[in-house]
Amino acid sequence: MSMPLPIRAKLTIWYITLLAASLIIFGSIVYVALLKNITSSIDKRLTSLAEIVSKAVFKPGTAQLPKDFDSMLEHFFGIRTAGNFIQVMDKYGRITFTSSTLGQNHIPLSSATFHHAATGTLSYETVAEIGRYPARVITYPLMEKGQLIGILQVGAPMQESAAVINALFYILILGIPLAVTLASGIGWFLAKKALRPVDEITRTAKKIEAGSLNERLKVAGPKDEIGRLAETFNDMIARLELSFKQMKQFTADASHELKTPLTVLKGEMEIALKTEKTVEGLRNILQSSLEEIDKMNAIVKSLLDLARIDSRIKLAKDKVKLDEIIEERFNQTMPLARYKGVDMKIIKNEKVIIFGDMLRIGQLIFNLIDNSIKYTVKGGRIEISLEHEDGWAIITVLDTGIGIAKEDIPYIFDRFYRIDKARTSASVGGEGGVGLGLSICKEIVDAHEGRIEVRSEVGKGSTFKVYLPITNKTDELLGELGFG
Ligand SMILES: Nc1ncnc2c1ncn2[C@@H]1O[C@H](COP(=O)(O)OP(=O)(O)OP(=O)(O)O)[C@@H](O)[C@H]1O
Ligand SMILES: [Mg+2]
Image (cartoon, rainbow, N blue to C red):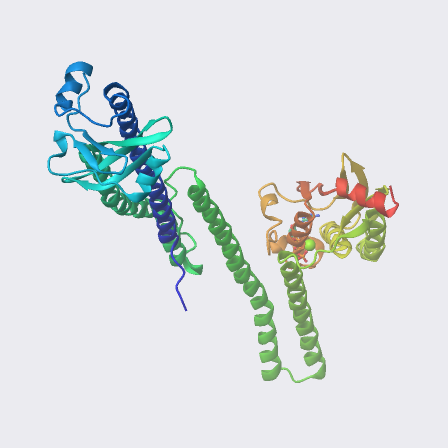
């Protein structure tokens, strides 16, 4: 198994590869251009010198040069042969004159060049060595009436230009690897610097576990990509921390709630085993045990409901006819209200359709009506209504019951929160609930992107209002389905 290359190495490799490639291309271009430039300027000089020498000095019919030709040139024409080589040959290629600058040497003449000259063509070439340095040479045919009468060769040692070219060559050969090495070091360092926050995120993330969700990344840097990453990461941890806390709290509350009926159940059974002998007495105890079991049943059912809504397991998206659901739940709870001696009625029921989970919304309405009946004493009144306004479906459940104190209102939607159990049981005849009803309502409303509001006054009554959105999507879908 091969380890994937770290980003840092990848970045550096890319960087130096590109740098080396561009340096090599650039260097080669400079090298070739310089070489061309130098030879072409030498060639120009040699050509004009060859022309002058041929036109000015030669007499027609001869290809001879006077002995003191070098000094003549300089004297009469101001042409400095100094440094340049001049060599003259007859039409057979035999040397007839060499300038003093050539000393013991002579300019070589290849057969190809000779053939060129014979047809009247100029040749430029670089010959390997005349004396100690390579030389640039022009071979210039001397023609008369279309006939070759001799060959003039003019050359220049490339001593200086060769030095320049060589120097450039070595600068490039040594300089490019050096620059690349240096740059790769810097690139490696920069990549490390740029990626350090990522390392930090990794390290912190490794440290964070269920128990240490309070840890956060330091977001000191600018709000660049990595800064945003760190922030997003922190937000995520914050959310995790919150839900983790809620979960813990919930578990604690739930076990506490379940413990009470279990303790009662256990106590009753122990008494039954030890003391109770009559069938009647045992029956009573069984009866009250059943009540405890019912209580636990209710708690477990509510917990399951909550867990389902929490995990958002398939919140159905049905076409929900709210007015029908209200009707249905009203009829279902009517016997309860009648039994309590509470006057319950629907005062308004507009036709409203929303998209949502029919069962959940039914449960929401039931919980609200259930509370109203539970917390309203005999002779009280309950009014239920449904209307729509500005894209919202508004369900109202009003009662003239015992009401809720201001300081309790913020908590009634919390799980297992119940106001003063004694008050509830005393005033409403022991219909103690679990304290989950309203929190289930809240979850359902949230899942439907709606909101729930409550207004209440102790001794006067309470009004719960639920707002559920009638979205554009609802209208569109309704149109599609032919309900427009
Ligand atoms: N209509 C109401 N009038 C007065 N008090 C209310 C009303 N509705 C809710 N409350 C108060 O808010 C508390 C929380 O309500 P919630 O429905 O969550 O729990 P519960 O009714 O006690 O139990 P559960 O609904 O789980 O059986 C109740 O205990 C009650 O004190
Ligand atoms: Mg309730």
